[in-house]
Length: 121
Image 1 (cartoon, rainbow, N blue to C red):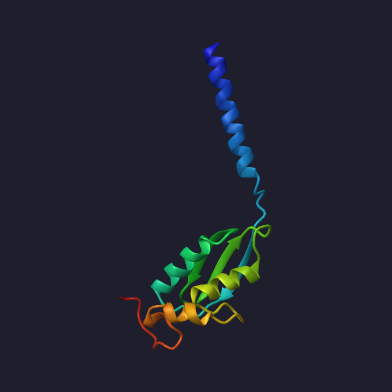
Image 2 (tube, one colour):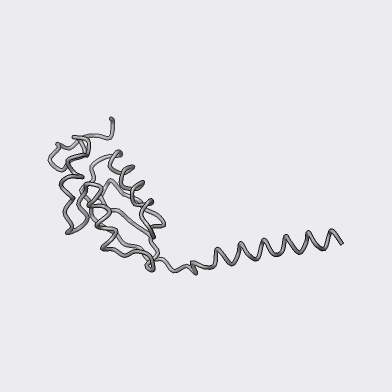
């Protein structure tokens, strides 16, 4: 009797877990945005802030071409809100210019007016 009960609980647990994972249903979208990021510090800051943004599943910045790839749930956010989140972090996002106050709070080496530099901080 105990074995049946535990088997039932295990099956219920596994089915519930599968149902929760299936809620997303693979319904994600991806957007690629050109940023004004310059270095590894910029990359860490942007990726961290974006993954804390509602609806964002993943964020990855390629420093070679300065393109941020963001995977998100389109029911919770959209490309315009993601651009705003990048701007509010202090960086340009395509045609959306960085929020000036946020940009001024960036380390000097990460600002748009800073000279090019290496990632050795």
